[in-house]
Length: 137
Image (cartoon, rainbow, N blue to C red):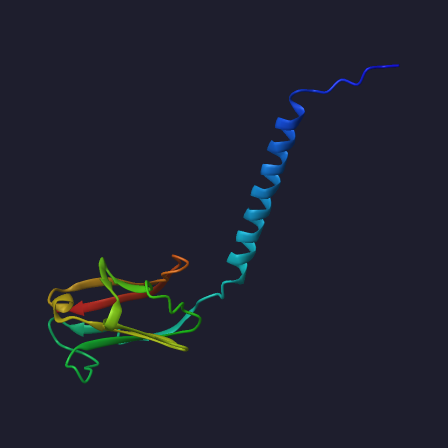
């Protein structure tokens, strides 16, 4: 009768195959999760410009504000706005079902230029480009 030989490397190979299968299924789940994130499209936003140091869209607290008409933005506490390199978050940011609004501090409009605006979702890290705000002479 023939003697059965066991390959010593077989358990290691099986463990590697199982770990790859788990890794692949995790990756597939993550890809499915990414697909399920609603597509975000900025429909409109404004104001888009102001003369240097001139307040715009003045709010009851006396500060300027920009509104963004956009759906499906995460209300995660770490969701924030980038106004060029300045982070706007917390009480200076309001997220609603159909849009976002945020306060623009006077210091941000004291010099001329084009300032990129983006929304960064706190839970996904997704960056939604809004546009460029112009501060004119």
